[in-house]
View 1: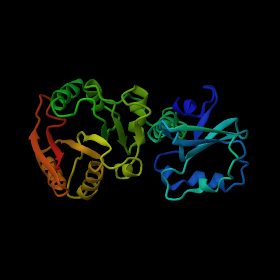
View 2: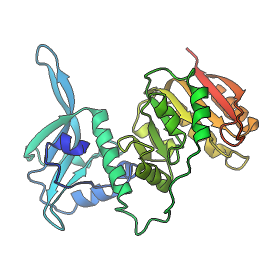
View 3: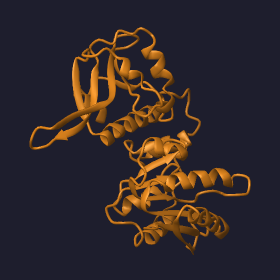
Length: 304
């Protein structure tokens, strides 16, 4: 796993992230409890941002990304804590010079390691008493084929893509067939878990997260494209929520956004909201023989 590589420890050593979710990496409930417990923190591993060095040897280790604490009780494990994404920074109070080892990692690689670790815990049902869903996630080959045909001329070849509201990853397969390795996000942990178990989504890029919190982990315009398939169903009651989700997600796109819906009304409502944020939008019908998925699409391009 990526965390083992970053920490330079053996693969058979167990590493767990202190928090249970990405959202908890913002509020840090477990981290604050651990650091306030009087735990002996001597001999931990520091992970610092690798900023590289130029030809003159200038640069090198950057800010602290996180620390891995070796525990003996209740089990012999490494526990990773980070305050990189929180509003407070309790790791700044750690005693200086107490780390037994300092390792470096790129900021994005570090985040991928966190996401992979959380995905592993989710897939192994470490935080679940029992799995409520025993059947595999729905997969419709005809939908994949239709999306491939629709997306091929639109998405930038080799670009970085974020898919919001991804569910278990049915539509993600179209992106993969087109050569992308997308980041995927959905608030439903069971959907993400099913996608991980079936191999539909990549563990180092599969996030259980409210899309409105994505900007806590990614920079504006970090992705070439942000997409969402079958967003909705959108109605008068839930439209304010969907509007916030789509507008905040779109801020992470540098070039374009693509959102598919079931109805024309939904697509036009999405387009109107994006235009108010400065996007040039088109709404188009995308019918297929099934008549169920992705029947309409809103495509937006950022105005330069």
